[in-house]
Structure formats: C-alpha cells, structure tokens
Image (tube, rainbow, N blue to C red):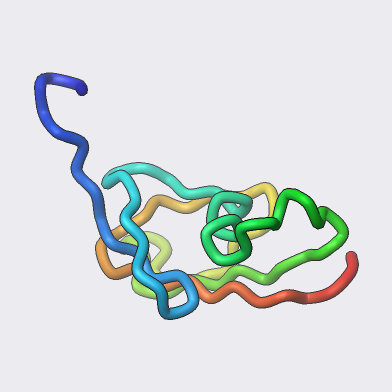
Length: 86
C-alpha cells in the first residue's frame, strides 16, 4: 500500500458485467478481453473489437487497438465483440 492508503477502485462495465479495477490505472486491450473471455490467451487466432464510452474528458469514447490501453473512469463502458481471424 502506498502512503498507507487502501487501493481505490472504480467500477467498469464490460459487456454489461460490472468489474472493479484500480482507480487511476490503465487497462490494456488484453486485460479487457480476458475479463470477458477467460480463455482468451489460449486462442490467439481470434481477434476482437473493443469499443468504449463514458471515458475521460480527453477521450470519452473510442476504439481500443490490440496493443493499446486506456485510463479507466468510474462507470466506463466497454463493448467486446469477436471479429474473427485477422
């Protein structure tokens, strides 16, 4: 624990399911997919589209690239959909 404070979390929504995530942290494409598809790492041939809304002021909505990450915010919504093979 830094500064003797408990780690604060925010609630993000991934495909309608709430998940707690450390506040002021980024979440990566792979971490988001793993929340929705637990066996994601066993199927690297499957690609996904990740879209988000209700994000931070400088980027309130967008698409997360496979090598990307985004800073989380309370109530942020992520949509994960399978796009097939790349």
